[in-house]
Image (cartoon, rainbow, N blue to C red; front, side):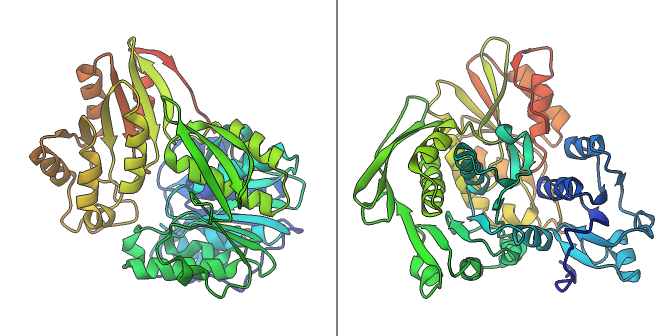
Amino acid sequence: MLDVKNDKGFRVDFGHPCRVHFMGIGGISMSSLARFLVTKGFQVSGSDKMEDKITLSLRELGIPIAIGQKPENITDDIVFCVNTAAVHADNPEYMEAVRRGLPILTRAQLLGQMMAQYPDSYGIAGTDGKTTTTGMVTEILLAAGTDPTVSIGGLLESIGGNLRIGQSDYFVAEACEYTNSYHEMFPRVGIILNVREDHLDFFGTMENIRRSFRHYAENVDPEGVLIVESDIDRLEEITEGLECRVITVGKSLTDDYSAQNIESTRLGLGRFDFYKGDECLGRIELDVPGDHNVTNALAAGAACLEDGIPFEAVKRGLEGFKGVHRRFEKRGILREDIVVMDDFGHNPEEILATWKVAHRYPYRLTCIFQPYTYSRTRDSFDDFVDVLSHYDRVVISDIMPARETDSLGMHSSQLVDALTARGVEAYYIPTFDAIVKFLLKNSVNGDMLITTGCGNVDLVADALVASDLCTSSTAKTL
């Protein structure tokens, strides 16, 4: 991967709006930053490789967007640019911005500068669960009447999308570890949900991932607080010697906050007693499924309690949280009883968590999986085979290369061959159109079809619920 040199010394003057150009504006996070600047009076333009629902929604705000990244998109009136991680030094727009001497900020640098404008900031980090936990924190702060500003890496219905502009000192944002993005953030309240193996195309080793999270932990305001899940391996290496307060959450009464008397409904909705030390503050009844969401809720609640939010608001917020778009989201029903679900899970841990929820339902489970990047497919190949083997039927599309150009010898058919060798009914179907035709022809009442992946596999769910066989659908828009 080519390095991109960015302008760490450049500071955005949010009090004096100017013209800014986003290179790769179509990402969920980039689009929220663009929306934020528009609300602050900035003139925003952008570009991306293809048109999608996000770019179309940005056009509705009056943001001009070029499809295709060309030098002529960098015009004379642009004061600075923002680039996504997929934009490298050989990108034509990037090269033109450099030629013109324009400051170029990464998405993370801009987000960090936004966060610095708010005295009461939250940064939610972890390999898994960031978006959901960010949504939970948001719901709690809304329940408490704090009027927060929120930037979230998913669509949250209660705020009408992926951005909320508040008028208070509260700011909530995901803190993404990829390319060490969260090292640009200095929250007053930090959360680390978990530290697992992912993004090895960038980090290389698990030890590098651990060092990265340690760096993020050191960024938390010395007068602030870091919330960490106590089952993180060798936790002391990440937390020892930090200037900020460190608060642990988990399932033991030895933790600062813990979930006790955990139960699940028939459909997997979590119920638990919320403990601070040895004191039960109350019982929480979640409206989202999965054991992982119990720990997400515990971390979100602990963070807000440590920031002075009353437990009554924590309870209302957590129990009112309905989930985030593309997190085990019901999209519709085909015929009488073919359920279409969609999930963002893209690493083995997340796919397994989805299965643990889905298998509680009385359905034959079909996972429609779009692998994301050749390197992740290679590095987690055996783990992908293990977790996908839990499903009754698996359909795998072509790998989405994203930022990668070297296939590393990986192909989706290799996953299918490995699954077939284990006796799993598995199919390699390269295109989404072909997958939709296959599912419409080969699904029966009692099937649950789960599109899975962080790319654009949700287009399969879109097409299924747009078909003539759909009898009920839940439309989601930005």
